[in-house]
Image 1 (tube, rainbow, N blue to C red):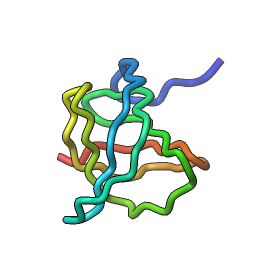
Image 2: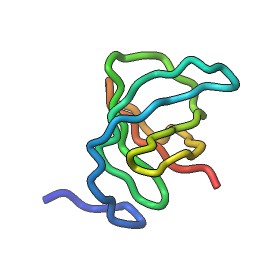
Image 3: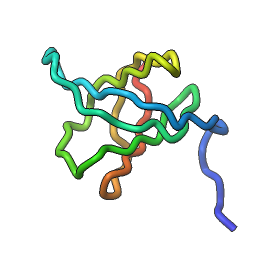
Length: 83
């Protein structure tokens, strides 16, 4: 059985989102698998290089947050929201 180490349980998202880097209007599309008050699990279509900090926007989940990458495994990215 997996040992849960998160500070808070995450709720299912399974909605699309956009990743914005810096002040550029160009976005990288992503899928938000799940999220909590503290972070989220994202999946990008390709193994796109992203900086460790970026902005996640998902209107369908009411999310517009700055993020920091905590881990990455191929296309999946675990992020913490930066407060």
